Image 1 (cartoon, protein in one colour):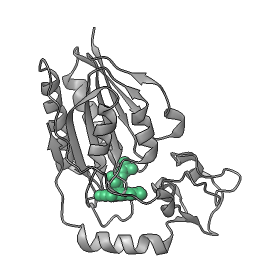
Image 2: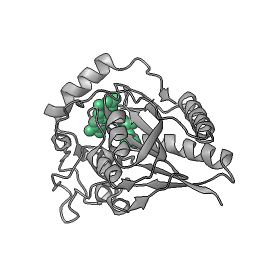
Image 3: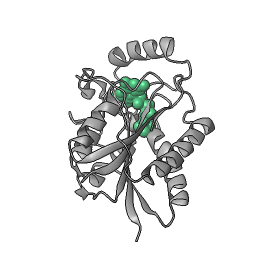
Image 4: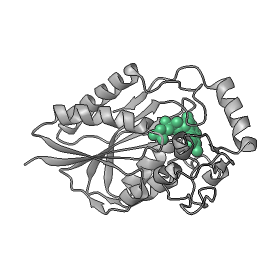
Length: 261
Ligand SMILES: Cc1cc2nc3c(=O)[nH]c(=O)nc-3n(C[C@H](O)[C@H](O)[C@H](O)COP(=O)(O)O)c2cc1C
């Protein structure tokens, strides 16, 4: 019987999902007969909060975007709900070509405290959710080839009798992050009430009675901004303009993926 390998990821604007599609493709193909590979996209609130327990014979790959150098709160809560018994785990972050700071370490510490052994980690530079001028078009073919290689190296490591824990980059105490609600989008009069934003919101923060009403559970992910056909959802200019200026001035040089195995 095959052991279970779950790929659990959070991806409000799709970049982490692109990396996970490639990981899943390679893992499912190369691990046939050894691992039963299944993906769980936990972006939407309805898919989170499921109790998941794993044994030493299983394996897990988790993935998320970096927010202000940390793990997005809804996904951190998901990680806190996972239970392992010396279960090997690989952690994959996507970041917007600035830096992943302490996000991998935060995820690693959380999982290690719940019975997992962190045997691999990776960070992939992707298009920044705040501006398409940073990390433009990524992950690209070169990134996905590296993701495929990471998947193959992970399988080789999992085939070892006792895959060793890795040292995950990052610092503790973790970098201080502001509440992501500072990025809560505004809604202009152009809103046509189609509710596309409500459908894609990962934290169910947007009222279906009045989509201009957004609750404090908003994480500023930008999914609603991308989904809006009439550009009625916009980040507050006083918060986002200086950040976009900093990103476009300092973070356009290509950052390569970081693999730790
Ligand atoms: C609220 C917020 C904070 C972010 N903070 C960072 C950051 O600290 N460093 C970075 O490089 N990218 C940062 N990003 C960019 C995302 O990590 C990046 O675009 C990621 O690939 C998005 O993943 P997704 O498309 O799967 O949602 C941030 C994005 C958002 C929405």
